[in-house]
Length: 383
Image 1: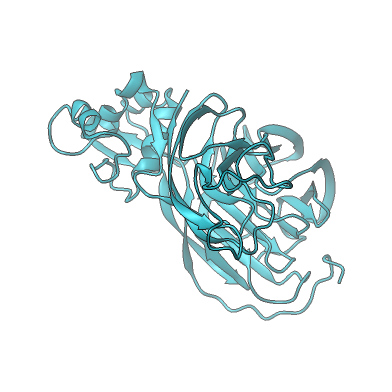
Image 2: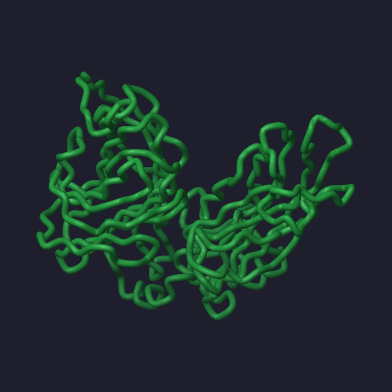
């Protein structure tokens, strides 16, 4: 079916919660930090399901304009943006900023990116083609940003189009999915609806320390506990200047001169060996130092002796058609955005070659008969 063909649908309404990263409010003068990652209330979810911090089409008909979601978070004035990663190739859907606070459809989104089902994307504004044609791959990040009342569309950090229309507020994030199973991942929105104090200007120039503090503060209570801390107890105690057993944003900013550390906070990422790539949900910037610590084991065929750890096959065998043929079968792999794949093994520290989403995988050519999993802790030292 032509993905642009719409079919009739009577929507049902319900609400769900999804985690998307939004603007930070740092109120150091009163010792309170409101984290940027919040639980955001979505409304009018029709034929979609919230998957972590993303959304996927799960119902309706394939190719129909019958699966929608609208964020209650609003850009009420000034600058702001929405950012997301593409989940799958060859899917048709649209997403962007719009004044609508109800159901959205392909032709109703004010400032939208259209994913055309053929690995290309372009800009649509209220159903009218504008330009910005670009090719993409799964995992690529897109941003639609309001800057000085003008709207810019970006692909992996590069501007592909700037709207000729001024932005009109308030703007919400609207999604209209056509292809069954199509998804957006790692959605973030910056509403810029902040109430700054004088101390905010102490923190604001150090974007990396601020952002990594927000990522580590998993329960959004404005402080880091020992449980949330991804590094040694000695480092934690050294930063805990007032000895209250938690780290404030001000104390955390002292780390490496404010360079910041982000990571999985002791949580282990499960790498599924039957998938080519597992999305970690982490964004790294070019030049960041990324440390991997991995454990676990997998079986790579019906032969129970054909096993591997993150360091690779226990027999040392190679897989002729694996992503890295010169590395042992089963060795843990990583990739940043669309950059070259590299071997990680059970422990390695590397400098991120580019900015992008971080993916993990297994160096094998046939994945469907694999079993088990690797569990990986990732720590990012911001450049």
